[in-house]
Length: 333
Image (cartoon, rainbow, N blue to C red; front, side):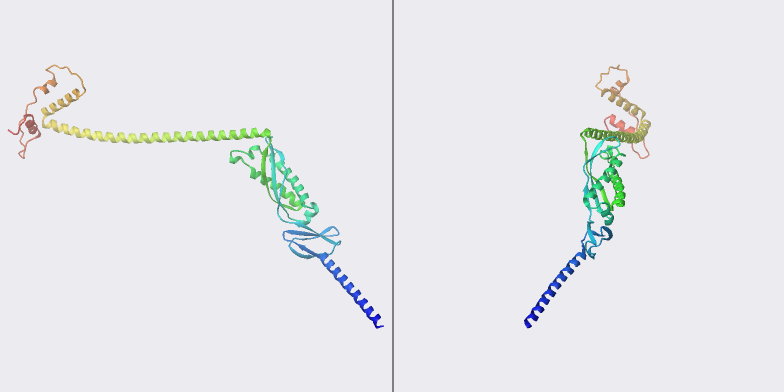
């Protein structure tokens, strides 16, 4: 009897142990199924029987009902870059240009994104279509020179990029829950038929710029020459005025000296003036034929008579007395 009782107790203990282990495992499985961890940079959309019921955008642990009642879809909220394929676009002046466009985007509304798009691959396809449509519309308003030109004022690349970004942002946010951060041109290429036109346009712009620079240089050169001519004329005029003043003053002083000399001794003054005239005539290496009774021979024959000494109040002699002494080669008589 004792052995049978021990056997029953052992069987009961084993059964209880198995039930305890099974219950623990079930509890762990249920707990794991109800546990939801949202990592950093991601959001979760909780669905109940396939219908979204709530968004979890903050990182951390959350509780949900186990599957198949509730399920969770993790969505990457970080920024991503998408490059559109090369597409040919027609400009306003009927030129084909090939543009490679990049888009910086992120998920702004996880629930709307999950319902309308679903995943990143589908989002890239949606963005490609929106960017291509906006690009074709915007480029139809600009000439090719808005993308490539030697004149920086003609380049409208930033304006075109901003227009495409604005058009895509409104549609992407409203319909797909996508926030478009930036749209830009990564590369601009041209078809072979347009390369010649682009080079011709750049050459024409360079020639126009060179012509403008030459015209400006010619204008500046004329201005500098005119200013120099005016300045030179002013300097010459001032010089002529100064020279005229100096010459007039010199002539005035010379006239005073001549007048004093003439008043002191008229004969000697005439004699001296005749000598000066003879000196100027003979200094020209000229041959002069004169009669002996002409005026120049008087200078070579008889000098003027020596004037009588004119006494002065101080007992000295006048200029005429000194001249008389030099002409007679001696001192006082």
